[in-house]
Length: 348
Image (tube, rainbow, N blue to C red):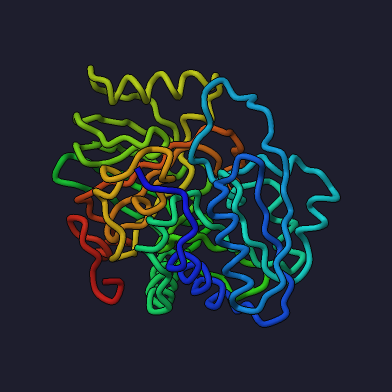
């Protein structure tokens, strides 16, 4: 078990991120947290901001009551702001917001307003700083992620296959693309640390085929590796069948059914990881409370499949599965960008 103690090296890690975010001496910086945020990271953010000459101050919201029928984990859609207008106003306007909420503001309903106001949001994933220290943002990653995003924007179809039997087609016309490299220095943008992802949110009715989940793939909602082969059938965005007479499949079936809403079964986003420092096996080395699983979302060459909210498709459910898959091949309009889990060409 890791000890929750202030370490000088972790202050340095946080300070490196804030410098990449363009924080200047004398700049006021908002630190957003909630009452259940990881206290160690909140303190490290404050100390690191002071170390680069900034003027940090805290905005702390009470963690809301649980209202979902199942535990909510790993959604990226924090409910902490609760649409409270004075709170949203405090987070709006030019300058940096350091997001240390449990789930993060990435898919929060209030984020659009905050970004349009000129704020830039640096979302620090709810990981123990030991994880963050190993995965510092690298400026060299930015152009490669931007290249991947540009390739997604220009393509009409993504095809995902694997030797295990995956064969998934995603129509990309009308989709929203995005990429994260681990820091943000541009007004009106959000990034998360760790970073290294190229993603797309398809429009409604764009995803069809099957996924074959193999041992070593991961369900980050459960913070659990698959131990048995599990088949997922998808028709017009919706999971129609989860095959397998074992615990992996049963957990997924029961969790999705517990939401009691069709959109829990729908595709959220798809994409691939770009971070060569991130490791697929890292989850085996930490207690569940010490990680949020962002490292596994970002490891280079994984295919990331997700269910849940997708604003482009008009779906806003709370349920969310993030499933990074190993050893897949990803092609855009027939051109391979990942082969058997390895990035290709200029993306590598």
